[in-house]
Length: 216
Image (cartoon, rainbow, N blue to C red; front, top):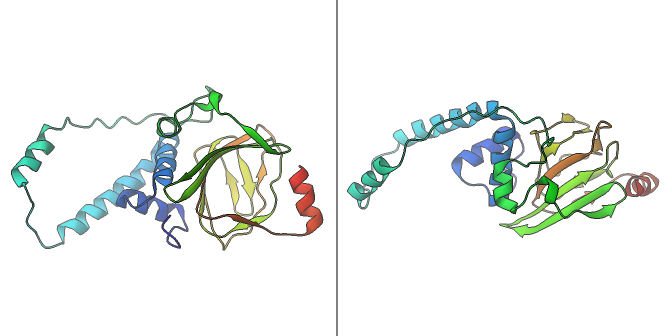
């Protein structure tokens, strides 16, 4: 990931527009924009700023200019269809960007139980990131921890709370070594999330609480 440069969702969006995100993080942002299409205005504004910055650069020769222009004009015009926000996974369907990336849908996740009330599907090490899907039982508390690098978490269904507030469907949590938190899934339903992790987490807190949280 872009180490020490992604500490807010706005910074994440800027890297998305710049095309500098690793593939799992790019997919996470694309899925977020499907679930919360109103935030596409942020991306459009950043793209406009990037375009203005390009216009200020001195001109340079373009190789095969005529052929490139012909290819651009031959491309069909894009139609900007704004979908309705997705409130969760009532239909059992992940956002299209995520489905295309992992190759299956929400109902087909081959979950593995890691802890009581906590299941995970590990997609492996992809483009420098550890990528996984997480299922957290309603009301379940995860152990207190911090991060050795950046972790991006996209809530796909349900919600969790930590010291910063509430994260519901389509919300992105950006966590790094400046944050120590103890996420708690809300009681209404399990929390399902996509995690893109730059480096391992580090457990914190007292041993009795850590053992209690691990046991669920």
